[in-house]
Image 1: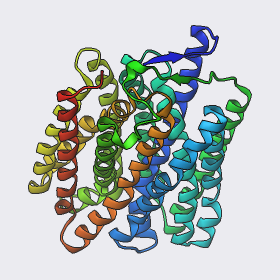
Image 2: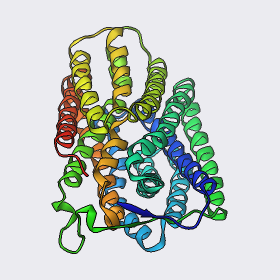
Image 3: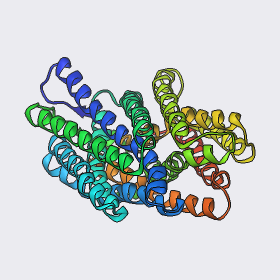
Length: 404
């Protein structure tokens, strides 16, 4: 597949890459805060684990509902306007946390989070494919893993911030901290939106050639095996990632080894550091190892680690749970890059469906919450074990039949 680039210097391209990469950091921070909010609302609003998982339903359900409209919007108006739309919704949702805190309504919080996540869906629908085509096709997995590494940095800061502010005071003080954090986040996102508004970005158009082996006029996207299977694999990967992070604090607390929610939140923050390191190292490994091969190996390792986490209860289990984040790190961008490879002018539409697959993070955590309420949090981690098995199978398929 060849790419058509606007007349632009390499410096302009690098600047565009840096600007879009900053978005990965912002939505990583929002995601990192989400997992701490789960435990915060369980305590401050006295809700069950299954009900607290509705945060994940609202957050990732927005991706499912917004991704396709966002893709259509960007196909018509371009990546830059799609990014600005996403940042506007992101900031609006963050600011809605102010009245939600005043009302003390969990439903209001869910609504605010839904608006915020609609913005993130726009950003991910724009940024992920933009990064993959911002250079040579054979380096798309490397570029996307590198950009996603900064998502990991944000995901580390989120739980660190939440752990320091959401559990350390009285109920009213903790609620005010939530309010303050999201107002600050909204203000930062607004400034970034203004910067994008004033900054020219190259619009990159994919040009499909017969050599791609894909003719949009005669074959629908769903007839392309590597894309269709990527959507399926992405659903289960995100389900595993979100479910593990959502109940990380509960798992640590229930081990009976003296871990408070605040301490567990710091362990979650460490997990995000490990996740980020995994992204950078994974990006480096992909210069030597085929992405599909690495995806398969990491998935199989995580299946083994999850089994130990389920059936072993000690501080070692916490360390192994943290290790899972390392091997998760390359999965989303790798599945995404493999899924859109060779799709030419259909990349916009394909990326929308791959972002919609994030709905796995809306569905499965609620199921894990139900298992946790009925049995134990450790038992619920058998669900991610199954999910990683699906991802391993996809990686194995891509090794057998790579896109050429």
